[in-house]
Amino acid sequence: MSNPIRKSMVWLGLADDQYEYDEPVEPISLVSPAAYPRATVTPLPKRQVVRNQVPEMNEILTVHPRQYRDAQGIAEHFREGTPIIINLTQMTESEARRLVDFASGLSTGLRGRIERVTSKVFLLSPEHIAVSGEEPGADSELEATFTD
Image (cartoon, rainbow, N blue to C red; front, side, top):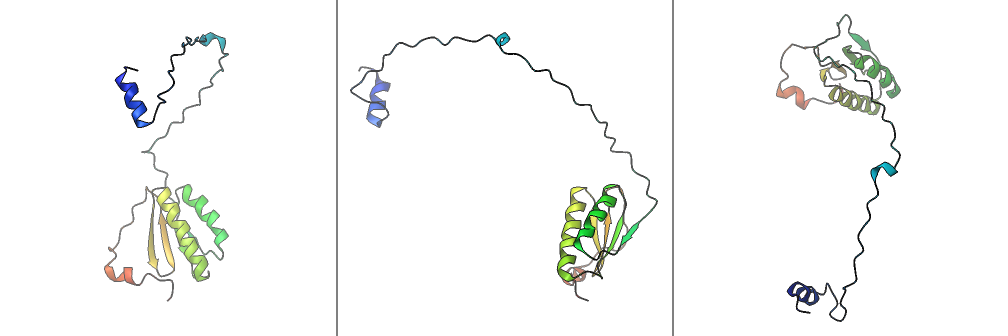
């Protein structure tokens, strides 16, 4: 046992001092790649995404949801690029919060914006719609509750 690496491994406890492992190593036989059948690959059709094409805006949808399940209709219209005004006055406070959370995630996921118009009215605007008006001040942030 004159190999210094072997002595270090024994000292570290990584190898046994009593046994020598000089077993003959058999060469690994390589299997030719032609032995395996190849599957055919069907390329997916490429969709041409045109970012500069903006859908024509000819309507703003106003919704008065009564239950949280009305959120699906809001999402369908928003995905089509329609700005939506959501009036939450007919909903309970807990469901209104859920719907605002949903609308916030929807607008973020589709690169749009959500803005509070009044305490229970929100505007969802798609990415291609510019909304102008006053900048919200610090006071409006403090009164951001659903109560009147």
